[in-house]
Length: 320
Image (cartoon, rainbow, N blue to C red; front, side, top):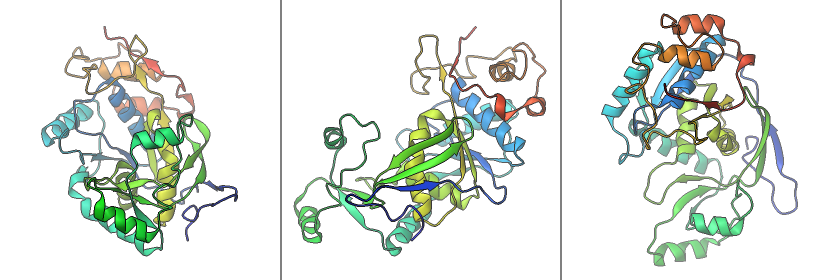
């Protein structure tokens, strides 16, 4: 079984697994959710993903994570493409949409099942998990539904009105990785949900399948997603796919210290940078130019870019 797929049990110490170094260059990627126009923080992360990809000999793919049909739309995706293109952020292939790739996620679940892993129904709620580990932000799965017998699982499936989610038994696995921006990291993975009770595939499964199938070996994203690396690394291992390299960018904050959000009216290109300085302001936040350099291009920022110079602290954005 691939490293990390079989886990420790009982008193056995957790497995320690380090991220392998990719043997050849694949792609970087930027994968926004088309649920609103990109705000300043999204655009800064996209620019960094583009810069780091090209700085390391890669190109950047664009993918839309639109599995949540209630919040996402093609029209919003088009607006996001326009915003990215206006900053000189390019991609060599047509963007892909997760909503058109569900057959791949179904196939991956079949692969996990065929590998001998236990895929089991789980009725635990977030409240249940919070009660089981109230002081652990990572909240490793306590095994409540994993430990049910086959007979008990069948009985609950017959009598429970509430549909269960689907978990995969990857156990309690400790993962180490060397983050390109945050440095050495360690976290714990526990049996992840791979399909929700409503039948929707989960973020963790979808991104692993997508990145593997698209040849993505470098992932740059906001540092609020760093906590998802252990689960995703364990899924890469279980699917016998090489892990990528991760880099997590410190978030952009507003003057009050709150993180920006697409859903609460944070500053977008529609209301900012109309004087032609949007790219310059983003470049200035990375120490690559003066914020008034209206003629700056993404290619010029790339010429000045140094991976080691990225600030590890959040950037406070003040609209002018």
